[in-house]
Length: 229
Image (cartoon, rainbow, N blue to C red; front, top):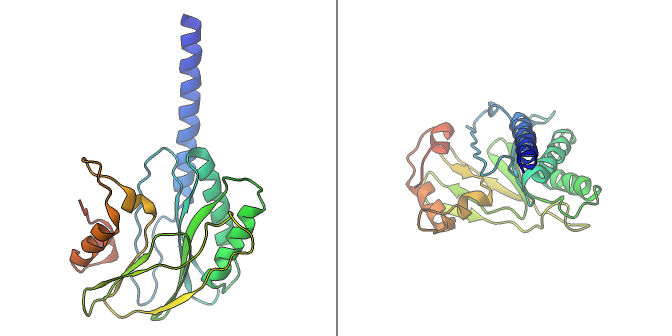
C-alpha cells in the first residue's frame, strides 16, 4: 500500500508539472501588451479558471497598417484547449498582409478542420481597426458591446457564425462600425457572462452592459481593471 501511495503521489506531481508547463506556455503565447494604434487605446485582461484555459487574445499589425484584434474561446478544456489555442495563434499570426476579419476566420476554420479532431473547435471574433472604422466578423462569440460617448448607451452587436473547426464551408459576414472619440468597444468570452456570484447567479449580459454603461471614462487599462462585482 505504501508503494502504491508513493506511485500515485509521483504521478500526481508529474501531471501537475506538465499542466503548469502548459499554463506557462499558453501565457507566453499571449501578447505582453497592446500595440499603439493611432486614434485608439487598447487593453486586455485574461484570468484562467483552470491551469490551462481555452480563452485567447491576440493582436497583429498588417503590412497595410491595419490592426487586427482577435478574441477566442476553445470549446474544449485543459491541455486540449491549450493545443487548439496554439494552432489558432499560428494561423492568425501567419495570415495575409491585409486579410479581412472574415478571411482570418476562414483560414483558422480550415486549419482546425484539417486536424480531423472532433474537439478541435473554437469560437472567435476578429476586429480590424482602420482609421475611424471597425470591421467585425464573429464565429459564435458573445456580442460585441459598444458604448457611445455621446449618449452612454450600450449597443449589443451579435453577428452570426458557427464555431471554427465544427462545420465545413461556413461563411462569416462582416459588419462595419463607425466609431467616434470616447466610444468604448468591449470584446469578451462567455467566461465573463457565465461567471457566478456567491449565490450561484450568473453575471449575464444585462449586468455586463450595466457595468459598462456605469463605468467612468478613462483609459482602456483603467476600464479593463474595473471590478463589476
